[in-house]
Image (cartoon, rainbow, N blue to C red; front, side):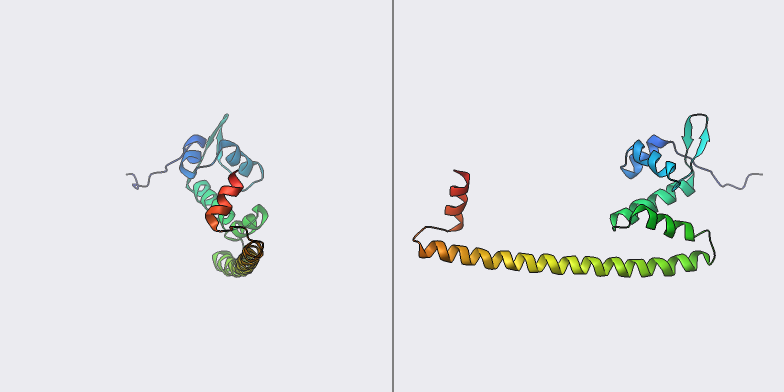
Length: 144
């Protein structure tokens, strides 16, 4: 009697297409030990665990973690204190990353405000010189 559990596997092409990455990227992650597909001769066979790890790697990269940090987070799942420790550590890392991004956002907002202020000053100075500095005039002058 069978248990009804199917053990689906994927090849490198299927995994690459599904996640929108290159074969080279997947081979790199394998080379540095982030994923460990089964090898059947020269063919890589990816199991659910590999697929899950790849999804976690790509999510970590999207939010700005480097590969070593991603490795640390993923590997914690299999180590003591296991999932609880992994999740606690991940929450700490998320808080740090959020703080970094908030600081970047503030820096960008300040830079944009400075650019706005400089634009106003430049337009006023051009106006004082008697130059038409409306946005349309400025755009057409730039394209000439």
